[in-house]
Image (cartoon, rainbow, N blue to C red; front, side, top):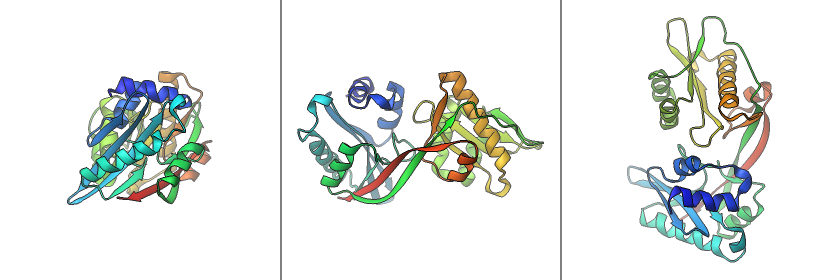
Length: 267
């Protein structure tokens, strides 16, 4: 299946997700990924390797509405397991495939998906959540700090030094013009923030230099993202994906909007 075909299936199976063709292509067709199935039922799987250790993730599973409750979901999971084993994977996880993921787990509101993963033997081991924030949020940068759209390597270099798991996402954000950086008076990068690197309009990743962390810098970066998203997509609010520290975003007016279950299957 090509990205457009998979998008058509996802739009029918999960119409409230508002995924675009570009979102589907970015998340499901990256390095190490494979899409199995057809235009009625499909699963996207990813495998990553660390030396001799390999781990797989189900990125997305979709079944057309008139095909549901007929065992197709279970067969797709079996196909994903078979493919992952053939790639040498020892575990299969749900959703958390940094740096390209659709969701950070299975949404607790997806009753059918929760029942499917339970029936297939996935072991729950934690949870993750998204938050929603109004795109009207605004905050000024502190004195001596400038917030600017990243066109160089400052954000990437900070990620390489302090947040290596986010380098690919930050790089994609810089390449597509949706990454912002905070600079001090010496023009050193003290923070970065990006949106739309996996799903359009979604915020993340976002971080400040651990040695010079300031809530006011974080607020100014968050403000730049909200303003940019409002201008690009015209939405009144947006999601912050896979939130870490809830207090920071909550103080800016964000609220928990979705909760996800993490799970794994030993292959």
